[in-house]
Image (cartoon, rainbow over all chains, first blue to last red):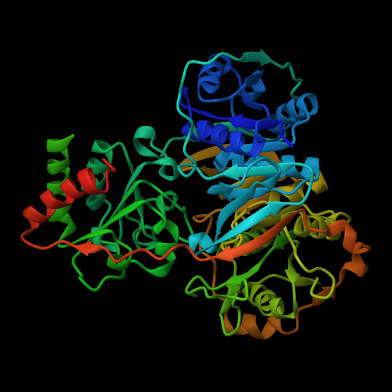
Length: 321
Length: 257
């Protein structure tokens, strides 16, 4: 049986996030030929509708309201439930993002459904869809099947390839929803992530460990990350030593990342750190210690001083880009 | 203040996983309190010490989880509740856990409920928000700072690396992110005292829950290890030649730039 699938689209700093397109690709598979409907919530989001259509959505529904400018679980759940009531979907796909992680359990609770979080791959289509997700921070994986009427998943950014963008046409409509009784008031957001490249969505991650030795030591890593359009991350050791904020920590506690390119500089490779990055597509290790554990998971390794190697790498990349 | 903390017993992060018979081997493994739940316990103790009241830690699991509850009591929690599902429920999912916890909590008039933002084993991060929804109270996830003045609650939460400052009120459920605090180690007197603190054990019957009500909505059909990676290449030669070779490999062989 084909399914109607609702997909939550997300914007960040004035443009659609990639995960919105990846979610459409996931929804296509789950739909088994059924309709894929993207949903956009915000104070002014209608202009993004056409792009979602071009990435494969059949239809777009927008809910615009001043109370949806910032995410709150109350505001977004009221808007989303109104769309769900209208559309009666058989499946839902959100990104496993700050918004998706916070909102999806509340919607699942209201719908009394299961929720399969942090999906990295989908096997089969339509009713036969089976979801693959990491457990123990990627030390193992599980295949999960939904037993109820509604398949509800969140997908991890950077794992399911978006469909090719092409000029398509589709209906973009708006739904008016009364958003009331918000119990959370957002005061302020302090931007800490540099250059707006989110660690969990970055295609390139340059991560430093205790070997970076100081907060200033992260500067060459940041320079390389900026050049490659990537983000800087860190091991627990570097965070515990206060070189960088905990929000950059990669590992079993901290973030799990799966970029195309992961460069580990001065990271020994404790098992907890490996859990957070070992599923990256290509791993480069730079470490003075040839016996460091990180070399066991690296595709390419350089035994050497990161403060010598990283600036040279930056110069070499400049030549070929 | 009436404070509850939801905790989970998990594999020690140092443990290597072994799968046999389609399940993660647990024999001989070390278990700990889920690290994010430790932040929640620490914060609960701090809130109680500042505002008065009582901290109750709750877990769902088997007899074995008593050890983690005793640890939480040794840290400074006042009471513990073990909801033992060993005999009643074969497979729990997040729906199941949230339903059971909410049934327990519904008449407790909790002012504040804390939990870890995610468990490092299952990694879904669902149970906290689901419990809040079932109790019809507000929730805030991945918090890094919590200040309570009367009914007013000021929170900083981590949103993908950025810090969001917000205001809300009690009753409330929050989930802890790393950076919220530095969890204390149980002291020796704490460990001695913990042995005498009340630890209540309940089963689904005690909560008037029918097994059918908590049947999991999802089913794990297979657990597997990620494919082993082929051994990588450690480059040789002088550093500048290695760097040139590396960039060439990333561009032409790995094709990631």
